[in-house]
Length: 126
Image (cartoon, rainbow, N blue to C red; front, side, top):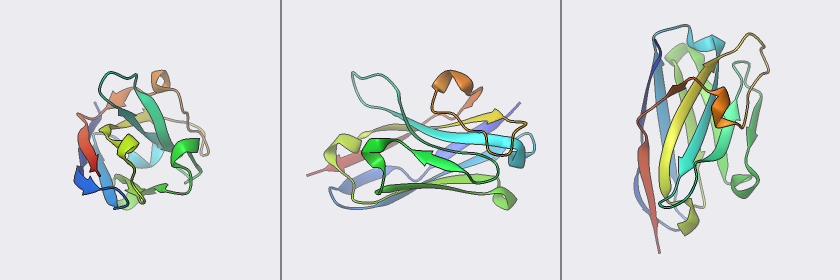
């Protein structure tokens, strides 16, 4: 069983920055593809960013150039660095993981992920 624990959320003013962390336990972290999704009130959960266990990564268009996903396999941790935050970035952010046999695999589809964290709230104020 894989457990994911997110941290780093909070209240920040528009234009500010936050770094989310997600620590994984239970299996060999280096074999996981990881992703961040978010869900705003009244909206569907949406993809934010994903990273393969080799480091290949992709960000959704609306956060491209502002958010960066990275990972430290030695620390079993994936990060989401969020800069130039906007009001519309307000949401609960979820970390997700799936075991992958391909070094460059990642997905932007939530159904591809087997394990989820409890979420961390990010609130951007004006």
